[in-house]
Image (cartoon, rainbow, N blue to C red; front, side, top):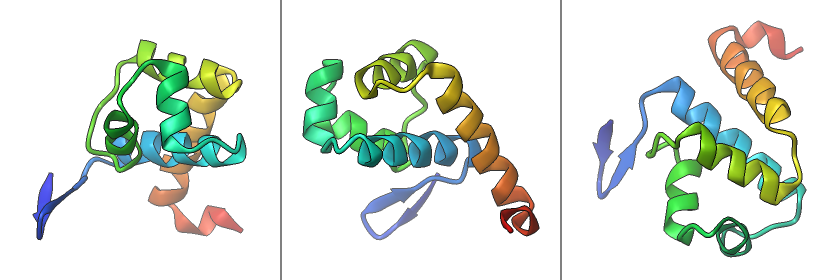
Length: 94
């Protein structure tokens, strides 16, 4: 992790992928961070830190998030893999 000002910036590509996919699925479901946190039983700040790539959530917590968003766990995992692949090879985006 690197610090920029007061915020921690994630350096791990996989943590960034988790956060990007969680945020994308949450927005697609029309959920706010507050609503998602209430559905999962987590703090809103936990969801925020996951989405920013600061935390490394366990599989069971990602599964709880997927269930709350009504997205199959395997779909979220596939999207994370795709996100990492696109970051490593930007030409694949087209």
